[in-house]
Amino acid sequence: MKTTWPWVFVAVAAAVGALVAAPVAAATKPDPATPAETFAAHTDAPGVAVAVVDLDGHVLDSSTFGRDGNGNPIDTDTPFVWGSVSKSVTAAAVHDAGVNTDLPVVDALPFLTRASPLGRNVTVGDLLNHTSGLPHSLSATDIDRSAGALEVLEGPDSPLLDVDIDERGGFNYSSLNYLLLQAILERQGDLSSLLERSASGVITSQHEFSDAVPPGHVPVFGLNRPRNVEQDHAGLGYGYLAGSVDALARYAAEQARLRVAGGPGERLPDTLARDGTRYASGWYVDSGEGATGRGANYRHSGAVPGYFAHVALAPDDRKAVVIVANRYGEMEAGRMSAEAERTVAAALDESGSAAASPGRPWGYVLAMVAGGIAVLLLWVRAAFAWRTRATRSETGALLEASAVGLAAAAVIAVPAYLGYPVALIARWAPDVAILLGAFGGFAALLAGVCSATALTRRYRRTS
Image 1 (cartoon, helix red, strand yellow):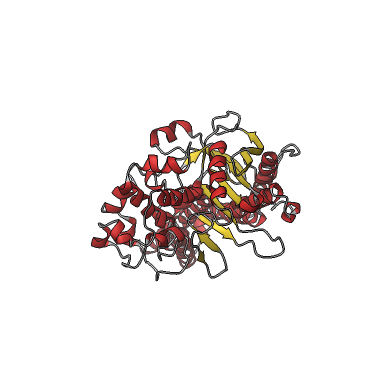
Image 2 (cartoon, one colour; image 1 turned 90 degrees about the vertical axis):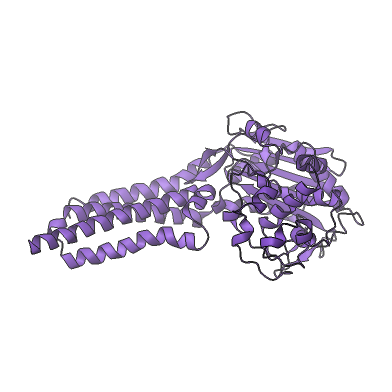
């Protein structure tokens, strides 16, 4: 005991110091001078591009910062993955293709009548505005697939075969809606051409995506780790379009121009969620009512592991703001979105531009510290249990083996039961997956040591 526990305290102190120091070290950057530098300083993103354009697509302000995942300087032609900003491109393509939004989905995709739990009253408009009742399921989307949406939905592993669908009409954000919309577009004609007509310069082909898009970055214990982004070709409609900040700015300017008062985009029907959030064809809608006197603004964020994007349309201000960054991890989603909103407010000269930086997600950092300490204590306990196995009682060893064995099973089984298996967590929050795996592994090791101790003592007693 006297020789073991001092090392426990040393290990715990080292873990706390490393886990707290990592994000602080990652934050060391020069004083920001441009919107891109400010965004990078507040989010630890290695590469950022920001652009403000007018409704004619003229650049009012543009700035870039940092390097891409290959070490090349970020410029206005560097490709970024757009994440869920892709949804508005898909919605625009649906409208541009003249698809009837009142058409039942089972008529637009006749093969669904054989196996789909979707009711006949679910329409294309429901898919556009997330009122179909489909659930949000990361395990059914954001997968490395080379097949298109039609092939995936018609195949034996269709994600629609294993989902619980709510009643139609309530707002429930789900990428599955836009998987179906991509399938509808594929039936309309060449998908790439339809999407490129709505957003010129967008990258749709898998070959071009793999060649042109550099690795993004995911935060691992506060530090950036490069990560190659594999395109989900069935997910172009909901998250896997890519393009430069210039291409995204041109698209945003066109979308803002359509949404000036009385424009065709401004008149699109929207959905009102229970919390008051409005959504219309790939855009969250801020009604504009209140003291500002401005009309409606439109916005959407998007992310895949390694990339983040945010677009804001302000038709009354005759501006659009686009932000792209090559870092994203799900545990920092709130931080990225808050900084994007602050950047937009500053670009539009709103009162929110004076808001403070969203700051570091210290709750997440502390959770990582606690997880690291738990892993270290399990490791030390396993070593100590092995050293003292000769003096352990059989009952005590069995009880401890049972307890830590249950803990080892729980850290794997509980997230999987909730729809977040460790493999999925590893994509969006790799540091969380590392700690879960380490905790489960050392708990299993301790359970094995205790079980071996109990069995050895039982054997000796009966022999």
